[in-house]
Amino acid sequence: MKLLVLIIISVSFSWTQCDEACIAGVTDDCCEHSDCGLNEYCYVGGFFGNDNYCWADDLENGCCLENDSVDMDCDGDTDYLDCPTDCFADAPGPYSVGIILEENGLRDGPDFTGGIVYYPVEADGPLPTIVMVPGYLSFISSIESWGPYLASYGIVIMFVNTNFGWESSLSRAYSLIDGLVTINEENIRPSSPLFQKLNLDQLAVGGWSRGGGGALLATLIEPSINAVIALSPWLDDEYISPAVLDDIDKPVLFLSGELDEGAPNDVHTNIFYEYLPVSTGKLLYEVSGGSHNMVTNPYNNVDLGPKALYWIEKFVLNDPINCNLLIEEPLMASQFMTNVECQTVGDINDDYMINVLDVVILVNMILYAPGYNSIADLNSDGSIDILDVVQLVNIILNN
Image (cartoon, rainbow, N blue to C red; front, side):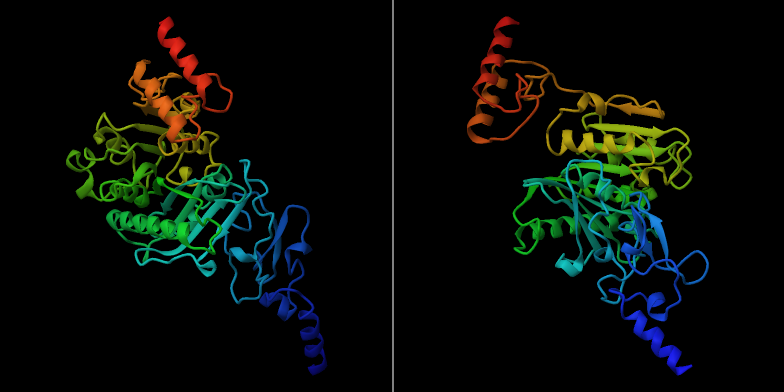
């Protein structure tokens, strides 16, 4: 018996990771990711007993979206650092995706815990950022699929957990604001992959359920926020009133499911949309047949991800290039409302007129604020220069 035990121990240390099932020699399926087939990864614990198992990484349920990967780096826990480098190979955008954790130097709290940042690896910046918080008794993993999705399109996204899980919407607002403090610190932390790559004037907040309500309230506290993405938002009764919501002046995207029982639309999302002032940009997309969980994943409906992406483009990046797609009603909408209007090319100050004021702004953009804005790129050549000024002047003279 002693000889058998020694043999098992000897074999177990031949593995390059420290999973308990492999150390005990009781797993038949896998001990590391390379034991699995193409696009499959090794997970801790099987469906029956303690055996590890191989499972396909489909990005929705993949190895980097759940803390159940084998302990590849032998640090005593299973987390995102144990995931293979190709975890986000299926992210839809042009950028590969990286992760920053607290153990990498990411600031923690005090008004949140367990922050995670997803970022576009190859993007030079300056980059926009959105901070998101989950709902009541929920964790980051409940909404984390939004991370690789948005990051692959060049958007930095930070998730924060609340300290206890049952906090109010107002408490979650402060968690989001504290997350913005961490984002500011990442921009000045020399060892961060986001060092001096963030545009701190392009910030958004979002959340699911009670977290979505917190995102709404955060705009009343923190003026640097540019826009909100509210996923099936829920608010405490004391905040559901015109007296509170009429003060929100930052554009809000509402995404919800038709059959939401967690935050019924007729007493939450629909009311919030109604109480927001007409001067505040707002859009409500209710997915036909969707539940409270419908909006937690951008892949649950073909239009969820793009609507969020176009919202950030228009109201955070100030680029209305996909505005017409943003305000287009999806086929799967059981309800769709918006007061957002799209600019005409050349109407740079968005006053619904093309005149000399637009020429002045365009010249100033060229001289003092180099960058790109599709509304100012009148000849659609991918740059803003004197040729666009000439074309704008011709439009004014001809009209």
